[in-house]
Image (cartoon, rainbow, N blue to C red; front, side, top):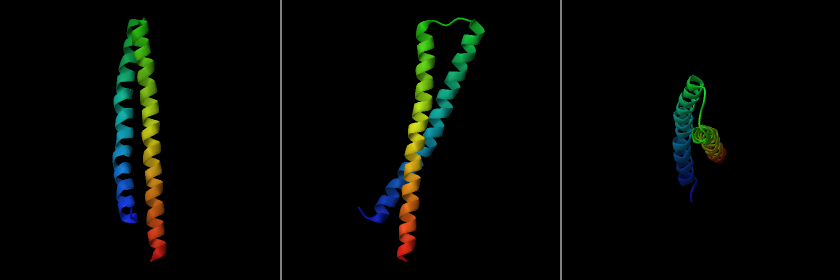
Length: 89
């Protein structure tokens, strides 16, 4: 794979992973906050709802971190490719 193709691949990965990290956080955080407020209002939550809240939190944090790391890795690779191309000139 040539440097141009690799650059395009990492730009595409970054372009998808960075907004996806934000989207995962936004969606799951909204659900987490809503469920947490419901629990506070009711004062009691059954085990399955509590498990859902916990698993949603794990997905929110884990998914956001995984996507953010992927985006960061691609951004570093893009910078490295661009620097290498600049040095060749």
